[in-house]
Image 1 (cartoon, rainbow, N blue to C red):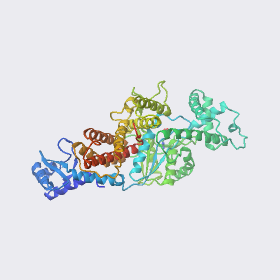
Image 2: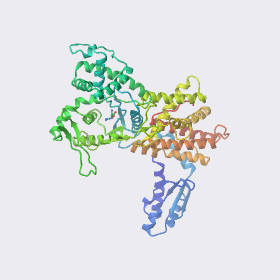
Image 3: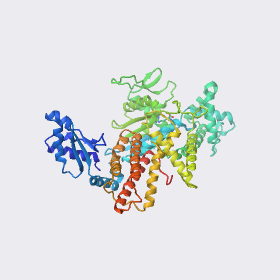
Image 4: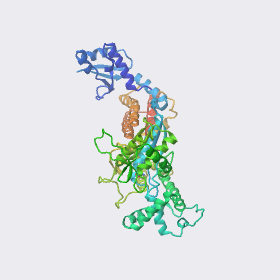
Length: 584
Ligand code: ARG
């Protein structure tokens, strides 16, 4: 569907032309003086300079041309030369009825839509999932859903950190605890047991202890290093252990991501990119891209236009070890072979921005992607505690994601029970949905790059700019609709009150909010929009006797309007990655 602003602009442009002026002056914007008008056009001001006329004169001539247009209920030329516009109620109703009956509310898909890989989550296997990975999961899931909404094929890949030193640390620590295990016996001929010799709780204890020990115990650190190396060379016992670590960790990650409403299409990781490394290196060598620098093999990525120094991308260390960047480059190769994406979006901590700059440049130099393939790092900021420092547990440690989710859930459950919002079996469902909305909205309402302060009281409040407030607005509408009966087919009617008109005008702004969120990979644009829309919906609700209205015709119009509002709000929160309960 054509956007409302474009429709109006076309009309005003035509009026400029009919009055003898350049059509391009007819660009209309949403009014910044809503007390005076709904839309405005300031084109007469610059036109005045060109045509050597008083701006108000031009505005008046254009207004005269628009007088007869049934789309407007008011066209006024105001000093010094503004055109102030109000839409005719019937015109607005027809437009919204178009939105109501169109697929995706008439929001046009991206004509250049293609295949998009979203790299998000990025958990490190064997290490507990912590807050640092929370933002990636929440923002990435939303961005992926927005990409899909605009017509792209989307592949969410969690890109597990599953090939690093943490594996060697766990293996070395296990060997100390249970040296008798067959995995450590070089003479063992298999098959290895199906059952892992540890649980997730064991792992959660083993890794931090081993990591701490490696910092003081040099011999242990060496062994962990060697174990990592041997694993990477394919030593069967270690590989079998690695498989166990993977299975146990993945099961736990899946459980956590499920609770967050985060679903990856694929669970590939660093390990899956390893087979792509040797041929890629060979190619880079043949192309003469690898240069030696202090014993290491690097790709120079500095460009003459750079104002800052961009250090070379290190591909291989002097001891032959490959690095994080090497794996990321090989992963690009793998993704291009598997999905031929038009775009790869990386939702990763903004502190890794230099890493991605280097990787993207190296990938282009090595022609791992087509020139038109978009590589984009969406760097996010830190979630801080109320002290303004990175969020910690009360004891000062790194908080596990599961603990955080449980804390929020307990907090919300207490509120749900205290206020008797729902009872019995509904408590668990309503609590979980409110908790998720509080957490996700509290994060997503900020631009991804911004650091923000985690504040449970604020995030979980039912009033103000919060997830629960949005849910509350939806649930309230749902309850009116349920009491009314069948509403789905009712057509939108002309607004009966200023509150109805404001709500309708807000609904027409949906495509702008979604397009902004899409273009800038900025779910916060959707948060800002739903908050505004919910505000108009609540004002309308307060000023209008909906269920008590005796004029059935009028009532139908009200119901159709809140029905559309509910659907739009639900669509938006689905793009943000949460949903409303039935009751609250
Ligand atoms: N595992 C990494 C970390 O914890 C994040 C991975 C991000 N994705 C990527 N392709 N490098 O920092």
